[in-house]
Length: 128
Image (tube, rainbow, N blue to C red; front, side, top):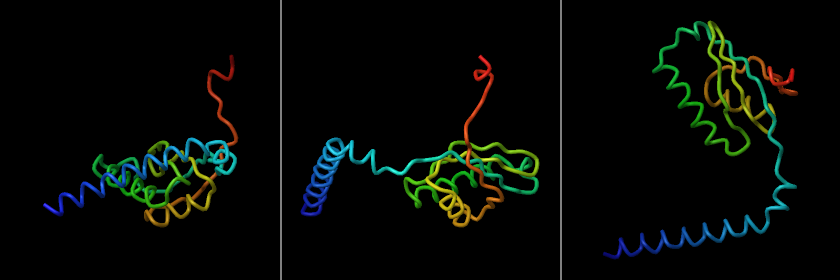
C-alpha cells in the first residue's frame, strides 16, 4: 500500500514539475528562440556494399540502431529519410553541425563517407 502511495505521489510530482517546466518554456519562448542553435540540412553518403540487397529486416535493424543513437545524442540531430541504392545509402539529416553526424555514425557503427551541407533545394516548382 505504501509503495502505491509513493508511486502516486511521485507521478503527481513529475506531472506538476512538467507543467511548471512547460509554463516556464512558454514564458521564456522569445529568449529561447534567440539562444537556440540553428539546425542545418545535410546530405550524408554512406558507402555500403550491396546496400540495395539489404532485406527489410536488415533495414529495420539499421533504422532502429540509428534512431536509438539519435535519442542518445539529443536534439542536435534529426534523421529525415534515406535513399538506398546499389552500393550506397544517401541520408538527409538536420543537425547543428557535421560533427554530431560523425558522432552518430561512430556510435551507430555505420560509415559517413561524405557529409555536405545542403545550400538550398530546387524542384519542378522552382521553374514556375
